[in-house]
Amino acid sequence: MLMLVTTGACSAVYVIKMSMGALRPHFLAVCKVNVSFTCTPGTYVTDDVCTGDADVIRDARSSFPSGHAGIAGCLAAYVVMYLQTRVRNKSWVVPRVVVQVGLVMGALYIMGSRVADHQHHLADVVGGAVLGAAFGVGGMSATKELTKPTFKRGARQDTDCPFSARQEALEQLSQISKM
Image (cartoon, rainbow, N blue to C red; front, side, top):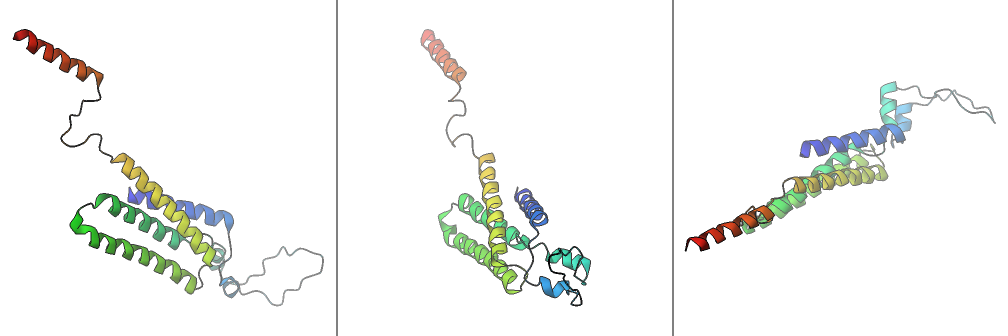
């Protein structure tokens, strides 16, 4: 399920990246603007003024949302919630919290490094983190729903069924009549 959720988050980030196309902080360094280009007042520029590598320029035009932040947010949210719901043993409380804090700190480190390396603006990272965390929380909610036990241990499985109640009453009547 985690793989499916992460794939969904990556796909959503990619679709938004390709449809929005915000510029990365280092776009002008990658673009290498043609400085001999002259603008005529009152006209639109329709020519490409970038002289850099086309693939690098295309990548520099897809900043929002951050894919790294999306994946980190998705993984951190999913695993933190998974540990919170599944690890219930009292002796594992401290290790569970340590792992959860470590996951969140690791995700924040990844997000901060994207801003510090001038690969993304802060809004790109926050958008990716929110999108990824939403997928992680949604995926964990679906996982909890899919793996929810249908009955409690020690309880009879057929107590909700009206047929079983009738069957039990008939058995009691037959036992009474035998006496």
